[in-house]
Structure formats: structure tokens, C-alpha cells
Length: 386
Image: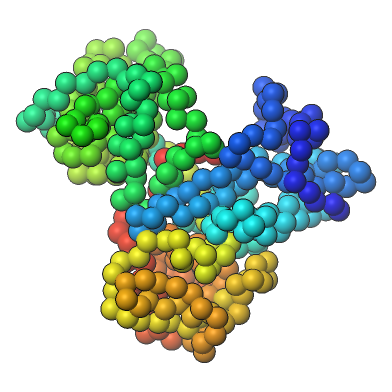
């Protein structure tokens, strides 16, 4: 089996595989694009599998950590069972490391395949259905902020408004170009902004959706407000759809909107996709992440990771003078398997849960330092699907 980075000459072969795997109907004009690269596996001189890697970054502790987003993994039906997908994933790890992506995320339809290579569930991507009576029951704002349709000139401020909120929510993408084309948001049916004294206080993006019933639905992609009045004003703007919609589908970007301001019932429908995270390069990932300021501490690890030998073995995480670093050596008092690194790094799972899952062993007192280091609250989440 030969694995290499794909080129434009592979477009037809890659489209054929993805059409078979994902029922893709539109052939792209270009395979190699800014912000995205990928690999193909060849068997007997023919392309038998493909894997794409997008250039993203996720916020952890307020810092944007470069991330390789795995997507579009497809294998020719005639060559399945010959280890093509596993070989592509193995090859992707050093490629992402070389591209400066110390962590990797994917949405897995077959979790077992990715778990064997060190990915593990570490966060969620969620939509919630809000019937109109629940939208109407949301609190009224005390300050009315006039909104207006967004224009091309608003795009930088709109992105900054998103970043002001997103950097406070672990797991959120920073939506950096070129992988994310910010201008495409203006193609949506509804993009309204709330101007403020210094930039935007909030914005809303949505698309009108058809329905089987007489009234349709509004699909809200982003409802972003930097303060409570901005959020309440955006919720109030949704109330104006009374009588024309049966429900609103809201993508959860800021969980405070739903949990602290919304008027949802005790039970309500939520569509959840889970994403899996892998730490590709532990020292680089730790160096890029934001951390709570703690008293000086250290924990000695033994990393069990046959697919990323560059960080396997004895490693020491050191918190000193407000910074956190990884250095080689130590006693290996806590053993962490590759699958444990992702949910620990994101804050999705405590060391107690990782121990119960058989992914961590060693002195509980030493392991507790790992929980103190991450110090997160809330569920890690993404608001982007790839």
C-alpha cells in the first residue's frame, strides 16, 4: 500500500469514492484548496482510499490551539477489510504534526476504528428545537438595541463578536480563514447585527426552512450576544416570527442562551453529534493551550501511544510561574493511554472517569493534579461540522 498527499490529478478518483461513501452528488471543481489537504492510499496502482484534513483551531483555556479536522474518509468497497482506513489514519498523524496541528478532531460514524488509533469522544455539537410558545416565553430585554441587516463591511466585526464569546467556551473553533470563508455567512436568508459603541454587541444568522406542515421553520445557526441585553434582544427578534413559524431550530453556540435565558421545558428535543479528539503531539498541545493560573505543581506520566512514538514514554507535565510545559523524563507515576489524552485535554472527562474506563492507572493523588490543571467547567462543544 502506498500513501501520499493527494493532488489535483486525484479529483475524479476521490469524487468517485466519496460519492459511493457519502452519496455526494456535486463534483467539486477543485480538490486541493487553501486551508485543506489530504491523503490517498493506493493499492495495485489505483486510489483505494482518501482522507481529508482541514486547518482549524479550537479554543482551550482561551487560547486557539491549531487542530487538524479529519473528514471525508472513504474506502473503495472492493478493498475494504485490507486496512486502508487504518493506514490512512496512521499516516495522517505525522502529517498533522508536520503541519503544526498538535490536536485532531473528527466526527466518527464508526467510533471503534478511530479509538484504535487514539481518538476519543471529547465534546458535542448540538441543535435544539424551540416551539414558538417557548420562544415567546423568553424574558423581555430592558434595553432595546436596534438591529439592522449585516453588510460586507460588518464581516470583520461579526467575526470579532463571535470570537469574544467563542474563546470562553472550550472546544469552539476560531473560524479562521482560509478554511472558513467568512463571507459565505451573507448567503443566508437572515443575518442581523446589533451595533455597539466599539464593534458589535451581537448578531444572528438563520435560514428559512420548509416543513411538511403549513408553517415552516427557522434554522438559527448563530445567536451570539456579548452581554445579557444583547442576547435578550436577539431572542426577542425571534418572537417577531410568531404566527409564521411552527418552531425554531437553534444551533447551540453559547450554552448560556438556552440554559440561563431560555424558557425551555423540563424535556425538550436535542440533536447531538459527538466529536472525537486526539492529542497528536502532547508537548506542542500543552504549550498552545491556555491554562488556569495555579500554584507550582508537576505530575509524572507514562504515555502509552504506539501510533505517536514521538510523545510516548515518560513525560513530565510541569506548571511553574503561571505557565505549563511538558518535558521528557519523570517516574511515570500515572499511566495514560492515547485515548485518555483527548478527553482530558478538552476537559470532557475527569481522571476518575478515565480510570474507570481503563484508560488511566496510577496514584490518584498524582492524577488529581491533571484535573486541577485543566480546571474547566461546562461541556466542550463545537458549533461547526466538517
